[in-house]
Image (cartoon, rainbow over all chains, first blue to last red; front, side, top):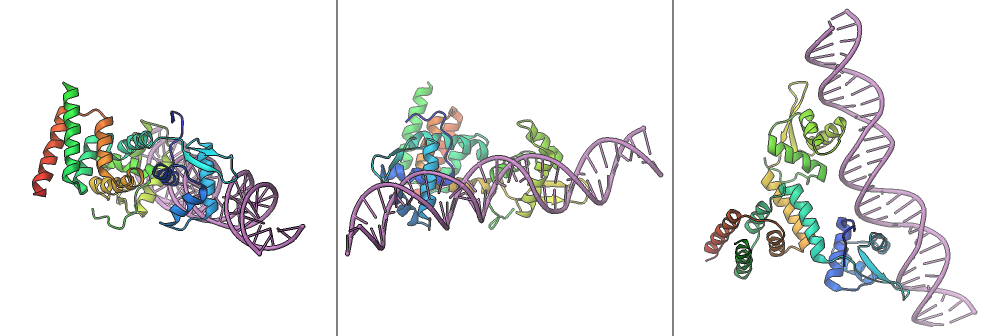
Length: 129
Length: 129
DNA sequence: TCTTAATTACGAAAATATTCGTAGAAAGAT
DNA sequence: ATCTTTCTACGAATATTTTCGTAATTAAGA
């Protein structure tokens, strides 16, 4: 899952990657059905997108059978990291603090989640000694 | 600065908004000069973008003088909030927790910033009682 | 006044992303 | 064996975003 020189996914491509990360190996039909739960998408539209993603090396494909089977070729974490960096720069001028404060402030956060964050902060603090 | 039905800025538009938020009122020339500190952009390219942004009501314009003066018509915070929501959904499937953990984990954070986050967490916790 | 430089308006080209139609091959059904 | 369905490949239409050229106008300088 190394993806150093793999281009960033577009919005539509990311949507498909999300489904592959969640569901593992999928056929075009399966992805298209999942997409159609939210909105109408033509089958060949999905097919074309996944073919483009193959060229970009965002996905792998097993073409042994007539019905090809696709899987993500980039990891969720690495992709999130790259997209986060870009988003951070463009929207928060690189200030991860501001982003974290907004994210914590705007959205519902449970006690457990807050504990998790506190744990992470403690960990960072001990590393900072 | 109400912007309920204002469309989201594109990447290029956001870049210009950032400059307006940082520098306040600006002419096209000033924005274009600032952009050219990073990369080459033609003057009319910047002009056209700002005219489009005016139509979209992302900026205001004072056209009393021949050289028009532009200012942001949407607030930084509100824009960040909207863009964050979209980013959260598309990239982190709506989990602000995962985003926060990534942001804290990946980037350098100073002691002071961590303190700030801890304060915010405390505030959220007391509100949750 | 005449020339030059700076500015706006506008249309359209270029680049990128998304959607879809059609053709042909493969598999399954009758 | 023939018909129907499903699938891939591929090109092209559509939509969106970005870039730029040209013309007209205004202001400033010689």
